[in-house]
Every structure is written in structure tokens, then in C-alpha cells.
Length: 127
Image 1 (tube, rainbow, N blue to C red):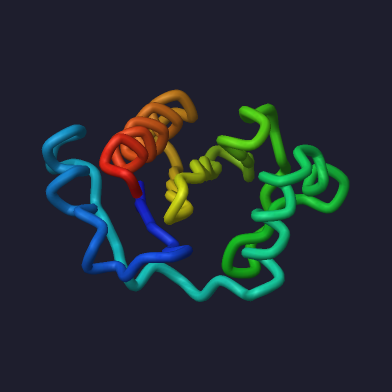
Image 2: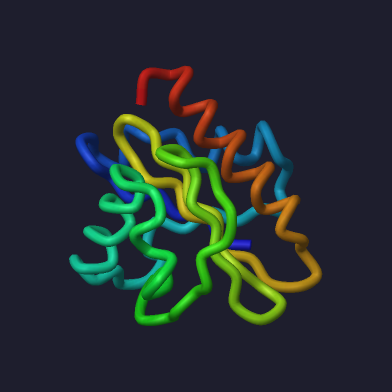
């Protein structure tokens, strides 16, 4: 699983990703600050879906040029996508988007739990 944090209003150095992820979920979850290139229109689409839930469903969710089918999430808080045996979970905080991309053998539920707990941790920290 890959965890990525896309900053909205803070610098990456202000986000305690490695320590927070390792403390909460153990060393099997890897964090990446390099991740992949997200196109501006992909970020815009994600932010629009958080503001107006359901806008991504007709066209799909794109991350780094990869298309995911949008599945049930939590309006305004979590977006979930599926592609083959893998998928993506995106959690919005006040300062960042936490993006978790998974593939087998990880399950959607495991990815959801990790991304949402990390997002909740950052929200509790005021990020």
C-alpha cells in the first residue's frame, strides 16, 4: 500500500506522516512523499467531489492518469475508488488529502481503515 499526502495549505515537513503511520499501523505500511504526478484537473475533480458529492461518479476518479470507478464513500469526507483487485481511498483534512492506493493482498477495508485513521489523526492535530 502507498500512502500519499497532498498538501493544501501546509508544507510536507509539517505533516508527521512516517511517524504517525508507523505508530498507528506498523512498519508494513510504506509512506511516500514522491508518489506520482497528479494533474491539476485530477486534484480539481477530487476537490469538486468533496464539495459536491457525486460529481466524479459519471466520469470516474483519475489519479496519475489511472482511472478508478467511484464507489460508495462518505460525502464531503472520504472518496473511494476501485480498479480490478485494487483501489484507492482518499480522506480530506483541513490541510491535506490523504491518498491510499492498494492492491492484493490488501483488502479495501484495510486500506479504508489506515487512510481514515491517518486522516483522523491529522484532523486531531489541527491539520
